[in-house]
Image 1 (cartoon, rainbow, N blue to C red):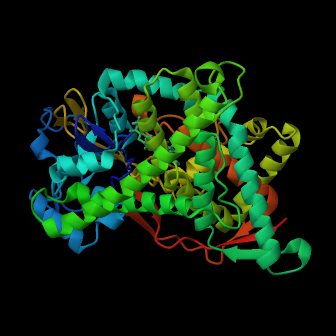
Image 2: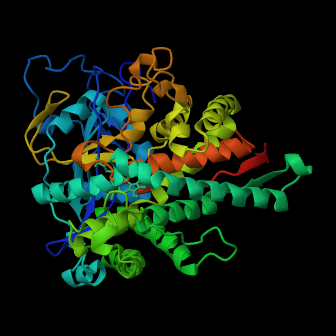
Length: 557
Ligand code: HEM
């Protein structure tokens, strides 16, 4: 990962939302960062993994302005080959879609902190240094930052699978998003939904304890069980999302969880897995490949929409019959009825918009938290000293909080650090993307307005230029005190897993609290260990996940 002069990293962090806007369907992706760090740019081209035009790691020795002081042209940006179709073939041949994060990391190492890539129908400028990402965000506007699936989706297909989802864009979008933020991002909202998340996290641990007692080994008080927790974590994430969003439990921890919910989980996985190839495949070519993929993709969305639609109808009926709608729900002092109830009660968004936003929240809220939790259990398991340090802080804080989950989290900053550290090493979306609304200069190259620029989070998070000892799992690095925050790592644009600015992840507060609460209750109940401390192999299916889910040993404390 290190080259002598430059250490470069990149990654792809993608957040996908499918929506219908004026009859076309978009996949939305996003990116972020900002920072310091000077860097030198190596110019050249990577061909078959080798650098042409300049030796690997060799720098121009030119900072910012170049030898002649001129800003270089867009065309001069190092690139991975000009022919997008040749690159697409290479991507398929070398299975690069599944290892996009590693491909980006390698390419930064070879070409320097900025490069262009053209693959199939998509082209982007990729960056990885906080300073460049900061520059990018300063040029961010409210216009859409979307990669469109339009070329290969007929309008009939779109209409079939869209089921009346209408999200706006630009200023109108912003106004709606601010209303939504009140229900999911603001402190007052967090206060309301935190107890719901806490209830699900406690139930998860109760269920796990029963399982360890029943299936585990060892004497009664010290029983332990080794298992792949990923199916349970997916169920946890869906149960938690439903509780917060619809205000109701769906019983996924019961002995016979509903098939409908299991199908929802599969549908989200399918939707995520089929997205990357659809993004890159050409519109009319490769029909044979495209058609079945599109069918799978569209039917996965159908399922997601109909799952949300059914729940929304139920919520609507429940609220109407309890006279909550239009009178109490959402009013100060009224009983909290979940995000849906709040939005309906306040009546500021149209029903179509409520449906669209709720569907987005549901689609975006399961894998994104379940997967980082797998990595978190693994890293805590293979770093017993870190685990013990976090547990001690959690125990003290829990004892003082008197059962108040919010107080407990506030008193245990290492939990927050653990989540940040996991997302630094394993950013669930590996890039955040923006189309700057004005021309900008990055690494002394001219970037015209409207260019798709990706901030690559995986290489950023693993860069020795940006983080001290980057491969070490060290939740304390995000502390604010001098001792804890080495090199001020807790500040600046280094922690960007949730994106940045007006478009940042709207589920951020739900995700952060959900993950911290689950880790808190697990650490209070179990000691975690893993049989091998080897690195987990990762793969990219739009989100970054383990190739094989890690097995964790849960031992009762
Ligand atoms: C660790 C968990 C998560 C991560 C790392 C994550 C990451 C992201 C990122 C990077 C973006 C794009 C931000 C930008 O462009 O600046 C995003 C957007 C979004 N996320 Fe998340 N997310 C997570 C969890 C969730 C959850 C739990 C939900 C729903 C409850 C959710 C719903 C959404 C939605 C709806 C958007 C689109 C927001 C918009 O453009 O208005 N995410 N997320």
